[in-house]
Length: 157
Ligand SMILES: Cc1cc2nc3c(=O)[nH]c(=O)nc-3n(C[C@H](O)[C@H](O)[C@H](O)COP(=O)(O)O)c2cc1C
Image 1 (cartoon, rainbow, N blue to C red):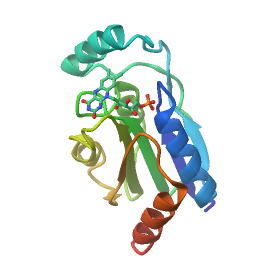
Image 2: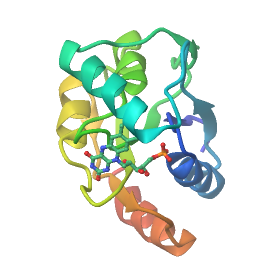
Image 3: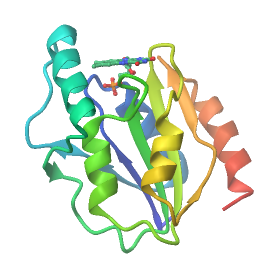
Image 4: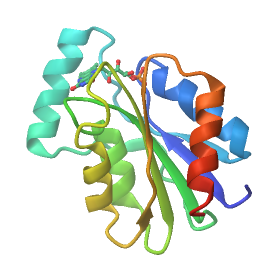
């Protein structure tokens, strides 16, 4: 789909794998969201930093992801579940673009908490968009499960 973008942030590559599979199956363009300073790969260090950022509503500067989204009508947005919400770089992406009139489709990877507040938080950040049901992935996902989900939401596109 030429007018479709898969934008994602991923620290440990789980969300990246899902993003790649969605892009492969839909033919969408792929865009990695990269903050100017990445998080530590040490869980405890990252957790401290992330908790602090979420509490402050801090949105980091992006070194990738800022490019225009004007050419895209359908935008998949992927994030890890970090303390029940999206990773701050994804909030930066949402704040830096206008999603009015576009179709937004969330997806996340998580460690057991599913979407948490992510779908609500994305809907709040894109009040003038049509939000379609997303997919929350715990660990690995079979490509057929992505296919099944895309078929279901495809009826609303
Ligand atoms: C700082 C931090 C906070 C997390 N908080 C949650 C959480 O609240 N609920 C949950 O299910 N998983 C949580 N996780 C697990 C991640 O969502 C999960 O490992 C995810 O697949 C990582 O995605 P990534 O590989 O794309 O970075 C957390 C991980 C980190 C590093």
